[in-house]
Length: 391
Ligand code: FAD
Image (cartoon, rainbow, N blue to C red):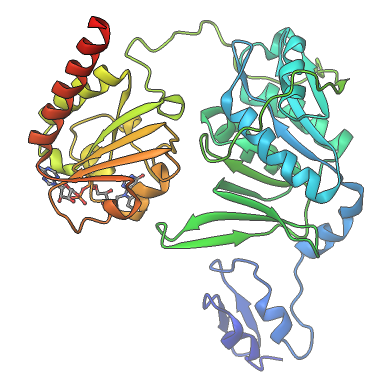
């Protein structure tokens, strides 16, 4: 009726008036605000029809993608089992692990020990190496057959490829890089919290209308539960559909020859920022890392300056780490950096500015020039080592 009531209701300015009707433009995010504002019910959401087809109650249980490489379960899978167990306990449901690969059934034991009640196992030579289409097909079959209400996937290279693809297949939402997961006790919905707007706000996202509720979590964010080798569970074997169309062939797996930067699993990290004032500074930090048996981390400031590769970057757009000791050298402590290292057991900060925000998260703060402090630390460690071997 061209009353124009919907125009003002749209937060995105996505509705334009013509002489005879309101027109919804491409800017629309399908938030539904206009539907409620319309006095004559002239606006409908066509997605709504699909919504009604999903019987939410038929979905039950929490499942975790047990990512494996070369038959070894990745740490992230064990961390997600720890978190998944809490969610499953809150909901009073079973915790399942999705294990896909070739000849990997012996790994189920490890998943039971870390909290899985059931392992959904898809084994086939076609699943030996990760390929998007074959793994998606196996995953999709498990979801459609066993209908879990929640799925957690590690935000690894594989998880970031697989998660959205699976979510698209089963027509549900996925919240990437969650830092906190919880259950709303009233609605039983998964509360998926993640940083938004450059880390300035924490957004809690829900998926009320579709199932499963899917989330990815970066390695190092959640904690593994203590393993119990006596725990057992059931193994549910799921056939791999031999007619799955897979358009890629893995001919050879070539390991990267350069040193693999495995920040997520490192116990000691020596990280450098713009305060290094040049790439040479990382040579000094490497000496300290070598003495500690650790590896180099970096702020985005140092990466953007071209002093070190982005595989070393820690933070919101880098890796999330949880070492025993994190030594931040010449890093100011921007919120986006802190987001990636605040869970370290002990944080040592070296900065010449006593007011640098990094000192707010540091357990030990050294106000000084890193080019004086770091050599002194290296020297001291060498002396301590010499003393202990002399004894
Ligand atoms: P600066 O902020 O320039 O700090 C340098 C510090 O070195 C200063 O505190 C200074 O006092 C100190 N200093 C200087 N000389 C010395 C010396 N000789 N001895 C001791 N101290 C010295 N950043 C990340 O790190 N990781 C991320 O993942 C990340 N993601 C981002 C995502 C978004 C969307 C945005 C907008 C930003 C992101 N950033 C990220 C960038 C972040 O906001 C900061 O710009 C960045 O972390 C700053 O790096 P820095 O601390 O090395 O540099």
